[in-house]
Image 1 (cartoon, rainbow, N blue to C red):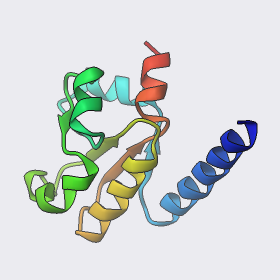
Image 2: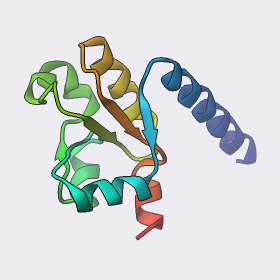
Image 3: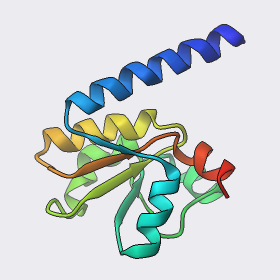
Length: 120
């Protein structure tokens, strides 16, 4: 069990380093809370519909990662896009996808809903 946790942590560190190189901004859930208080942001939750219904941020729009390829055009490309999932892994994949589609301001929420839950 401990080896699995260590492997996941190492994988997250590698992914986050790759995202920084690709121009994808990283923020914490605390920073996201501040953004939500100050303005109307484009927050996309890429978890499954079931996960989203069980625990969601009311300002978030649910576009599951497996639907993003067919639904990315629902997003406003000239606005900052904040992405969240359960842990940060699916949202990092979604962020890379949107960058390839030409989105300039893509932000990944580190730690995802797991961190959001613990900071409530």
